[in-house]
Amino acid sequence: MTLSASLSALDDAVDAAAGLGLDTSRAERVLADARARLGFEGSAYVLALVGGTGVGKSSLLNALAGGVVSAAGARRPTTGSPVAWVARTARDETAPLLRWLDVHELRDHANGAFADVAILDLPDVDSTTPEHRARVDKLLPRVDAVVWVADPEKYRDAVLHDEYLRHWAPRLSRQLVVLNKADRIGPDAERLREHLASSLRAEGIANVNVAVTSATRDGDAHELRDWIAEGVEAKRVMSERIAAELRGAAIDLATRAGVRSEATPLITAEQRARLLADVTREAAALIDLTGLERQAVAATRLAARPRGAGPFGLVTTFIYRASGRDRVVADPEGYLRRWRERGSLPRVSQPIRSLVGDVLPRVPSEARGAVATLIDAEALHARLGGAIDAAVATRTADARPPTSAVWSLIGALQYIVTAALLFAGLWIAAVFLLHAPFASVEVPILGPIPTPLLVLTSLLLAGYVLARLLGAHAGMLGRRWARRLRSDLSRELEIRLGDVLFARIDTIDAARVRVARALATIEQGAASNSVT
Image (cartoon, rainbow, N blue to C red; front, side, top):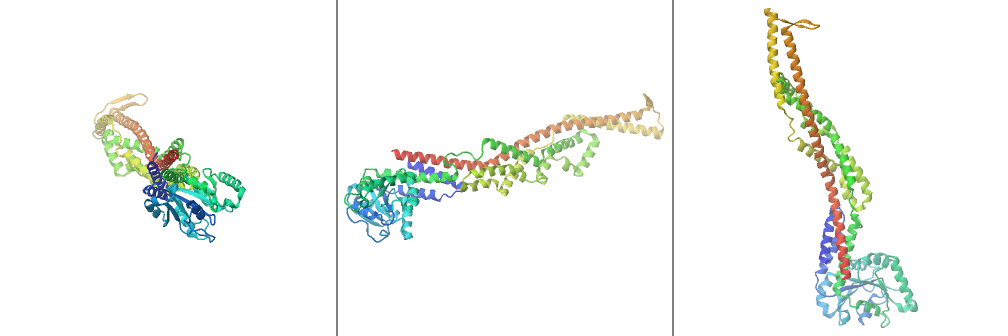
């Protein structure tokens, strides 16, 4: 796994984390520093000597050099600016790197054992001058290896341990703790070495060895000298350092995104199904699908009248439409579009608000803002309202009542009945006004009934039966159409609401997965770099 793959992975993690509302400034700095560091030519890696006031960092560097490289003395702090000790053969190629590190004091040497390393003597981490510590803090993210220098008096120093070792040890692949001034403790040096090593292990710092040195006696810096010159390839030191820093930045993002161990979905498949069902049910109740069915049946019957109710059907239909009654009780499309008049959206949004309220405590605090946007009242209601409107518009675009040839047949019969009624009416008028002769029909119980009256009664009964047949048939078609409308609208509501309910959740989950995947890629790369 190459560093370029790890850099790309962290790039993707930064983009995903930004979508979650996380602060990505640290990861962005790591990326910028890594790319800048990889851009410098040369074979030397950068090693920093870090420690508190008076622990002998400068004296230790002088002992390594066999002469004065960095001023050392009783006045504290002595080192105010970083001093670089670089092989003469690497001076020119190392110069751009040192300028990037903002190190301007340079001492060169001809010692071949240190040809592949540029050693920096840094200011004291516990200096009373704030600028000194600031220089250390600025340089540490950019150096490739560190020697943490302590002495018998300060080897348990809280500043060194709590603010530096504990923070930086996981981010450095090559580092060493040096217990300096061993000449002051004599035979107890090994005991202090073991005590310091066990203290580091107790603090969870297991990847750092401890060396014992004395810068004041010739030869007592050999453990440090051997560690530096043990033949570690400079390019590997740099690569491992960059890989470790990339990994640290990725771990930081993953921890704050809540995917350090696993990128589990914010809500389970079961919770999604239950949420969608609950929200769809509340939305259906809000737009009133039962009322929609009544409107659809009434609209079908209204459509049947002009075709199946004879001439009187044309008149009643005209009156119905002219009065606006049809828009009130027989307009399923208009009824659906007026759904906002029948209720409000808080009830529809309550299931998702409850679910997100249960999820939020399980999300790291920094990522809660992105999840909380799911239930921002104004935005949530706008999304839900838009989804309902879209579902209504889609399913009512061609919502025309059904028709049937049966209606035309019934209508033709109604015209015949109407004509016969007109004839019967004229017949009865002729009987009463002109005393026209007429016959009678003997009816059980009732006795003789005039034929014109019997014909009129029969025709009225036939018209009533035809009207009932028309209503029953139109009602049957209307109810069938209403069920189809209801089913189609329910399905469309589920689709539309699913889109708006889960689109943002899916985006957040996808971003969390990207962060987790980037961490896995970077950890694989870091492991690969440490093995090769």
